Structures are given as C-alpha cells and as structure tokens.
Image (cartoon, rainbow, N blue to C red; front, side, top):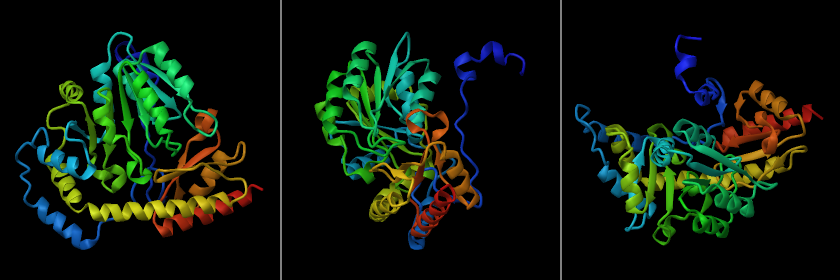
Amino acid sequence: MARGVEQWVSPAIRELSAYSVPDASGLIKLDAMENPYPWPEPLVERWLATLREVRLNRYPDPAARRLADTLRRVMGIPEAAAVLLGNGSDELIQTIALTLSGGSRTMVTPEPGFVMYRMIATFAGMKYVGVPLREGFSLDLPAMLDAIERHQPAVTFIAYPNNPTGNLFDARHIRRIIEASPGVVVLDEAYHAFAGASFMDHLPEYPNLLVMRTLSKLGLAGLRLGILAGDPEWIRELDKVRLPYNINVLTQSSAEFALRNHEVLDAQTARIRADRERVQAEMGAIPGVTVFPSQANFVLFRVGRGEGDRVFRGLLEQGILIKNLGGGGGALRDCLRVTIGTERENRAFLDALRRVCAAGV
C-alpha cells in the first residue's frame, strides 16, 4: 500500500469499490439506461452551427440562467419553485448530502435503490439507513414511517420510478412519507418521461420536497445535466455548496438547443415506451424468466435460482451487454436489468435470451 494511504484515507472510503463502468466496445450496449437513438442529421447540423457561436475563452454563466428558464418552461416547474443545476444528478445528490451532513445526521432510502445514495452518504459522512422493499419491490410504507420516526433523517431519497426495479411507488405512500419527514424528501424522477407520473406540480404544497430530474435518459447522457427544483430557501442553501461554473458552456448551449427541439426527444421517448411494452411481453413468454413491471426505460427480470451469472455470461458471449444485479444476493438474487434499445438491439437481445435460457433447461 502506498505510503500514507492507510493512515489518512478514512476506513469507510477504503472499504468502498469505485463505481465500475464495463467496456462495451464491440457489444450491443443495453446496460446503462441510455436513449439508443441519435438525432436526425439536419438537427445535428443546426446544433453544430449553434456551438460555433459559443465562446470557449469565457467562463459560463454560473447560474445557467437561460438554460434554467428553458428547463422551467419545458418541464413545467412551478413559478414559486427555485431551480439548481448540477453536473448530472450525482452532483446534486452529493450537494444535498454535503449540505445536510454533520454530527450523526442520517439518510434514509428504500432498498434496492440507486447505488449512489449509499455511496454518497459514505462520502459525506452520513449514517445510511436502507429500508427493504416488499416482495415484488413495492414500498413498505409502515417500515419507511418507522425508520423516519426512529432515525429522524435529514434527507430521504426516493427514486420515482425506482432504479433498478423500474416500478412506480404508490403516490399516496409518497405523500405520507413527505408529511412524516422532519428533513427534506428528494424525489428522484430520472425516469419521469417514461412513467407518466410526477410530483413536480406538488412542490408548492410541500416546503420540504425537492424534485430531481436529469436529461440523461432523454438522449443527452453525454451532457451530464441534472435539475433540482424546490422551495427557494432550500435551493438557496444548497447553492452555497455547488462548485462554481459547474455547468460548462457547451452543456448549457447544447441543452438549450435540445430543449428548443424537445419534440424530437418526445418522439424518441414515446417509441421507447412502446418498445418496452413489446419487450416485456416477449420476455414474459420465455420459460424460466420472471419479468417485473417497469415504468422506466429498462426492464428488471429474474432467472432460475443460481442461473443469473450463467445467463449474464451467455448473453455477453453473444455480444449483448446488460446489467447483472445478482452479485449481492438478497432481493436482487439472480436478477438482471436490460435497457430498451433500438428495434434491432431489442430483437438481438430477445433472441439471445431465448437461446441462453433454453441451453440451461
């Protein structure tokens, strides 16, 4: 071990594993919940013309005001709410955790959930409490309310729809959690475009509610842009922790352009939703495959006991990269997650899954 590492790096950090992204070269990439569709060529040319006007020698607008105004209009952010932008949702999660950390402060979230909640709680020195979901991955409201009462969390994160399970929790349960929480509740609506449900309109009702979104799932993953909306007092305090100039000029210009042409993104999203229904139906007809309902742009499924690793490797050997979630066992034992791709990619995945599952019979 390098000199000083054991002495100065905190044990909590040394015990972590870095967030791993596998090399997808030469593979059909269906592991990262990306929009598989590029822009039409005429739109690309117009975008490039816009970028030619960007002045790279100047710092960006630190508040990204024009972009924030555009996001407010396109996403229907209430006039009374304030907006904070981040370099992806991950930076916003970290900003929230750093702002609220200290002492024995606690973060509560349902599990299984987005892995970055636990990791960032560790980075920020917060106590992390994961509340197991029920069988079938529905929210355990009594357990959540009990955890909130016992731990008095500074922040509760809830992915809506949930990642990695894809389901949308009961809105009545979400309201109960917001009303019972002493701290802030963050609804992570990364997949809102595929769900047809949101709490954005409810921000004026709940001063302790923050709604977080991203443009990554809409086809702009390469821009790394996260959006947080909520009560101006909360946003004002969080903004003190935000690093200056965190949204670069190319991201600001590109995101503004994309949102001015959001009908292209909307059409792609509608296509993905329709393809999701077809993929789920075909997967459900494969012997040995249990498909969980999804309102996101991915599908969680379980294969036979002890078969998860074999199915994952079998798909990889046929050039299909998906996400293997079963390594930790527990609720996600033998579970895998596939992103909805193009029609050709979906067909390749389904054909490969049938072959791999049949080979195990």
